[in-house]
Image (cartoon, rainbow, N blue to C red; front, top):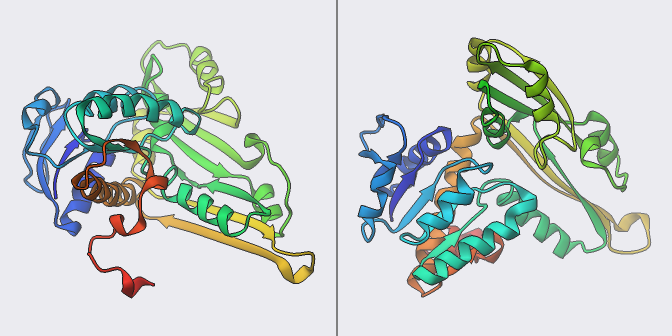
Length: 318
């Protein structure tokens, strides 16, 4: 499979590193910055990507969900079949609609929101709910660095650099662990810890207010903003690990013995490194589905599991 990597931040580098394991060919990396690949892959200005139409089977779009992907993905879908990791849950339906319109008009195939959540965890929630319909599902993230939330912080005027840690609530985890089925508000399940370095002369109160009131990202949560030096942020950004769980509690009958628990958990040494592998598996599915004539926009929920697998035979996994 011939891939392109559009965007060369942490996620783009994670995709490139994953490609060395998978054996896929990186035709080119397209970046808005002057960068060099440690693997020797060619790096081109982002604006030249259209010139590689026909040479790239799948473009892996690596940008932030706050501002990059809503613009990048539909634009690139006019020339390439592609995948992205758009992760603003409340806006995925609109993203699918917009990208789908561009892809259908161009005869390309786009698979969006293909990270570990949304993406892998979306599959877990679907399978768990299908197999245990009488139940409740709980998703916990962290403790770990959220690339999307960190990017949203850095978009605020006057912020020189920033990093965000998502922290699950000990109380909510304990209750679910004991089998308690109840509704939790978002703020009861997670906290947001923000570490922010400001440019000189910036009003701290204004920045903090913008952070804690930001819809989708911070407003529903207990958010703590810590103003620190740029060196401290840089040190924290080097901690790229993350973790998460999807837990479903449910019943299949009227007796104690019919109570069940299903769980998928991740402990990641590198969030972007692991997400890069998920994106490559999604790109493989796009490559195969497009060869069968599929166009438009899909998510991992629309993909046959065998299309994700690097080998043709899957019966050894059954």
